[in-house]
Amino acid sequence: MEIQRLNHVAYRCRDAKETAEFYRDVLGLKLAHVIVQDRVPSTQEYAPHAHVFFEMADGSWVAFFDMVDEPEVAQQTNPDWAQHLALEVPSIEVLETALANLESHGIDVLGPIDHGFIRSIYFYDPSGHRLELTTRTIAPGQLDRFEAEAADLIDEWTRRKKEHST
Image (cartoon, rainbow, N blue to C red):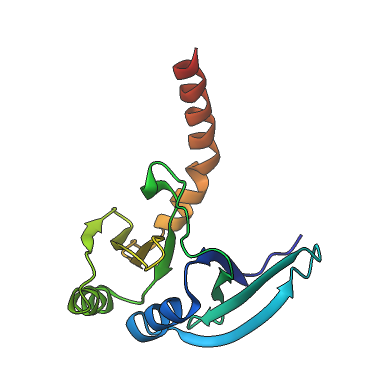
């Protein structure tokens, strides 16, 4: 298998227009494509919807489904921080500009938070999806070290989780 990059990730939204205004006008993503259909192409289920795509600088997309009969989107994750969409910006300066822009739009922002390899800010879109804007702060060679230790850390976590459940 040769997976090359993210094509798109899709979420539900409560209103296509509100979502377009946020992702285009606040976050600056390009409104790239909209599909309005009555049936789901893969299942042919009757479910009128708009599928709205926003393009990022690398050509990948984030997309949203606005369902005709769904005025609210139930956010069923608990804790809500565990499920989020992280979007990368090129520098700390751009992250700081984004923070000021979000706050100027009245959006509550948590951060910046220094994770040791990235610096991030967190906020919610109009449908309640948790978003993260982040920039890499890693030193040369750090990604190679992360990769080298990743499998051992999963094994260690699996043992710890098993001990916790018994």
